[in-house]
Image (cartoon, rainbow, N blue to C red; front, side):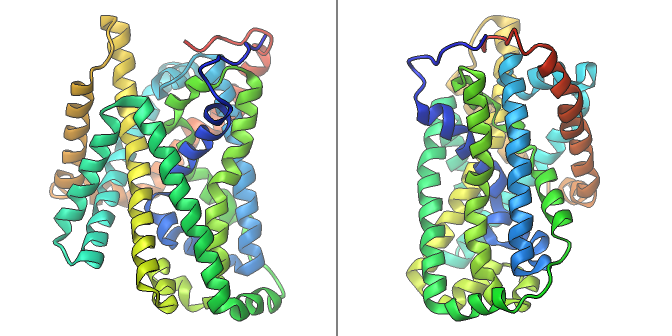
Length: 375
């Protein structure tokens, strides 16, 4: 039987923080710059792109509900505990793929932050990368409370900037946006775009397991999971509506966000948007590093009956970021992983989504009458 909510966990923490955290992992660099939206949604056209986004939203919500229920059922606040319950000895397959994934995305985030520093301030790229690394370290050193506070504050900024963007876009390009929707006679292969995009981003549901400690009932898990999909895709839908005004040219733009911002010709908003992208990189990077810290913290707790100190969190984060952002590319590791990125994404799907929606659902159904208390 589900336990009543603990007095220390507010509705905000139980219902919204998981969605903020999941959104943080998914948005990252590609979504925030519009590049992923151009790849997965624009080919389907205006209405088709929105249909693909709606499908991705539904897939996100479904898998988050099952993930959150499974995490609560088996007391999993870190990905190792989760996958030991889901895959048994096969959990090492996920960890190997996940570590490669982390090396790649942190290197990409570091490069993106460097590019922002160059574009906005004319600095050498290393300074933007260093600023992002130091910001991530400052957040993750102090554990769950600090990370969750970041999710909230950055989310407010992100939603506000995207809302302001859609207002500005309609004020400047409203006619073109309406024409794009009105002139479309058929939609493209929206189902494939929405499914593929959702599929490789679902890893975020596992990255955010540390925030599952706030879930005190199955009802909490279901509500938080259902909200996670819309909270994640709403900013993208707002941005996408503005993008359709520039079809088909924007589809080939390296940075669709810059393509549109240059046409808005509002320097202050351009600067604000770049700050938002940097904040999105911070969220995603901090989430990934925090997941590694929590995995190590669990091992320390089990083996030594001790908590991972702030100093150790700082040292682990520093070593991880130094390697991923500054050294991995020099050794050719980033290029090697990037070349196998599609295969890596399929491996993550095979060891997470497929087992979760089959064996995981069966285990939940089997044990639904005796849910575990989250430790």
